[in-house]
Length: 127
Length: 189
Image 1 (cartoon, rainbow over the protein chains, first blue to last red):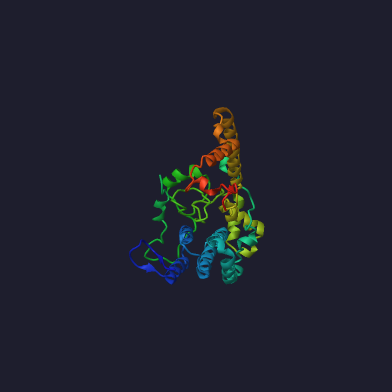
Image 2 (image 1 turned 90 degrees about the vertical axis):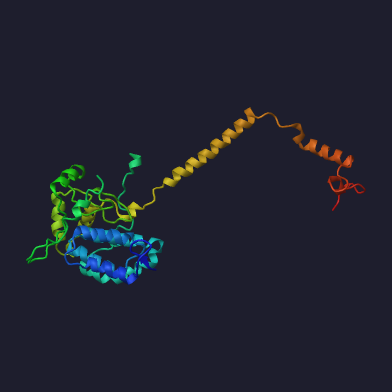
């Protein structure tokens, strides 16, 4: 499935180009918090589940920025992007990124206990 | 007022120094004083961490935008101590500390964001009440508003009417009497 970078005219980016673009962005040694968050928001907005290699680059960037919760948040967003195919896609992704998770000490949302709701937030419409 | 954080983007660059010995990167966003005066009275002591959804320095939980513009909780000394610990090996953080860090930056987890609210029950109840109300309305209208039905509607009248039509041989060629067998006095098969 090819995705267009901009509008309907012009060159359409291939999957590998998209992967490499994001990996190169996350692998920049002096990426900062602003940029990594922008990349994660953009990547979540793309119509795809990111490849494990992009996720690994993002997790390593979180480690460089010393932000653990951002890594877990991003893993949650990847799970959400799987949609209703989560039980087909997530095991594969988890298997591919497990070495990185173990190396960096990042927990998956299940291991954190966040696969089920933990706290309840009162709706503003009920106040 | 919108995109108040857009002006900050230009500040986040590696400084163009002729001689630079160390790579400079900051995980903290530096705001100029004017932006600080604009934003901080509204958000309190919370750290601005990114562009967010639209450049406003607000916290929003949205599935499509994992990273909001500001952290959720204010920076207290305990949290700052945890952040220091975060700079070391993450395996040395206990599960409680990891959860603490997550909740400091984020309000709801994804499963909490998308948890079912049970709101559909309110709609179903309202719908059933509407049905019941409609039923009451129909009963009232039938009893009070409508005139009595015409007498020609009753079964007896219609049977007598049919008998009269057969007696008068109405429709004897192709109509109702053509289907009546006058010898056997029953309907033709």
